[in-house]
Image (cartoon, rainbow, N blue to C red):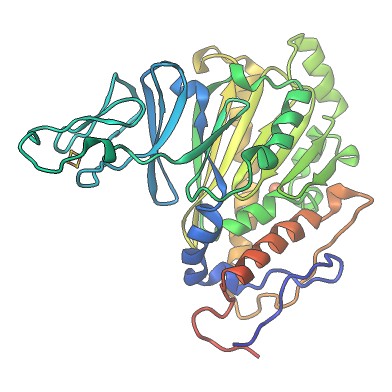
Length: 382
Ligand code: FES
Ligand SMILES: [Fe+2]
């Protein structure tokens, strides 16, 4: 097999990630295990499972999971798969004393132990203790809950620690946040195009003129670490002044942060707010971009500045969706860039694509290690 062009160690000279890694469904299939199951994926906010007995199911990259608060008030996370005949045990967010499977009624306690199985007394060698729900690795970082399906990811603190430390330093208090709602944007593109577009602001001056009036873009920056990217800067003077006039202490900076592979953490100046954005791939060519809004109060009581964040969200996302879907068409074209370049600029990092290179470089390493080739479908390119 021909090796093809690879993302190299030198971002200034490297070609971009080859188009076939985006457009080949077999690459996406391989990413399920090598990227998604091997990484920390956002599950929920701890406040969504606040009371003993609260439980919240969610299917993450094909795996039905459930997070449970046990009697002692500790979190537990399990595969939401009954060990009788594989039914999903918890259907929706709820509060119960036990987890009871809706199929044949087997009952698990809040620590996942099988405590009763109907009409099994006559069975020989029936060992309840070996039939508990299977735990899944999870981590709670500043009240946000993440899961790592295959258990091999580096400690979650390494990935998300810097992002949430930055949030706290900017006046966000994650523990007190409540989920207001989420908006799902359906995007016709591979999930990586969504991330590529998110981690650089080289496109901002051209594609988001409105945003440049809201933020002090000349003083904006991108700071990239091994697993995350902090992007942001001070708000424009008029935004800062109106925050001060509002008199509500709160968040003091603007951030568009990303953590490997699909979680984004954003906040804006003004009264308490934080948004989690998730790129949720449905297939190699379709992605849901879920924007979830958290504030310090119920949705019915939001302050006007908080309400404004929700209303502004759609306009900016529409600009980005058009860009991402345009790129997707181009990547599927015969004329997709074979070499491409990263526009790296370490003096004005807000105009740099270094973070795109870093994201691709990590992916390239995973593709190489897992023998995922850009000519996966058998086509030979010389
Ligand atoms: S599948 Fe759950 S009780 Fe049968
Ligand atoms: Fe954008």
